[in-house]
Every structure is written in C-alpha cells, then in structure tokens.
Image (cartoon, rainbow, N blue to C red; front, side, top):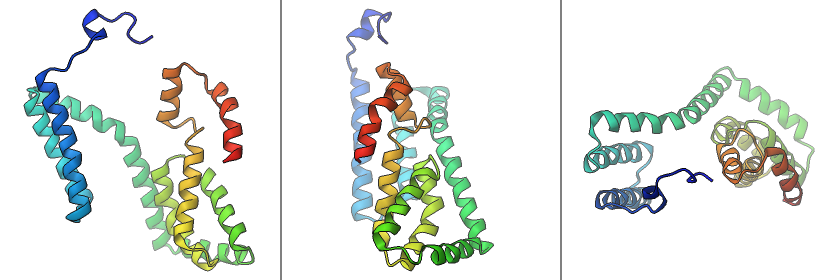
Length: 208
C-alpha cells in the first residue's frame, strides 16, 4: 500500500556501510545506558547526556552536516514536546497542591470517605479512578501517585499494589484511547476504522 508508487531502489533496500555503522552505534548507546543504569547509578542527567552525545557522533559518522543534523534533532524532539508539556503541567499541579495544602485536604476527605472500604473494594476503586483521570500515562503517574499512594496507607493497602492498579488501568485505557499515537497510528497502517476497533476490542477489555 505505502510503497506502491515507489521507485525500484526503495522496494529492495540495502544497508550501506555507513548505515550499518550508525546502527551499531545506536545499539551500543543502549548497551552503555543499560550498563550505566544497572551498575553505575546513572539516571536522567547521564542518560540524557549519553543520548545527546551519541546523536552528535551519529551525525558526524553519517556526514549529515550541521543543518541536516540540527533539523533532524529538532524534528525528533518535536515528537516528545507534548509529553514533556503534560509531565511539566502535571508536576506543576502537584506542587501547587502540596504548597497550598490542597493535597492534605483531599487526602483527609478521601480517607474519611473510603475508610470503611475493604482492601479489595479500595484497590478496585483505585483501578477505576486511574482509568479515567488523565489520558497520558506519564502525566497520570506524576499527578496521581502523590495522592493515591498515601491514600493506600490510610486504607492499609501496600503502595506496590496501588502502583499495580495504576499500571493495569493505564494499560487498559491505552488499548482504546483516541489520544494514543500508537493506537491511531496502528489502525491507520492496518486500515481499520476506530469504531470497528472498539467493536473488536471491547470483549477483551471486559474480560481483562
């Protein structure tokens, strides 16, 4: 479908030596990252520096030139801008709630309301709350964990179970949310309409 009008050279692509070297650098970057995180205590700052540095190395190896390299970098960063804004906004809300003691008020009210629930009822309620709060999984984590994790303490539910409820809810929502680039992109590639996808997936969602 997508290559129907392409030239013959694109229908039988072959990797050049430079492209093979770039791929090796790409895989080496992840190998170094795994080593750094697992044994050297690396986190966001060092991982970011690693990826930024290797992007420059790849640009030099591929002889992209300054203009092409910076343009490619900006295009890639543009895809992540929406995620960064959501996380920043969610974190800003959390800071305001903490500094204004709003979080404490919510926790106190919720603890009084949910105090009589059993552990099973409480954690299932958490699952449904997490399912409908925020479509962004990262934004949802930043926004909800400071509230729901301490709330689990009030209900004598362990925090790892609260995180499991978040992960499960996020996974379920990400199967059908129209704001997910993976869902919509996959449907577009498969040439399946969104309403047809919903009709297909709802029995699985119900089972899960």
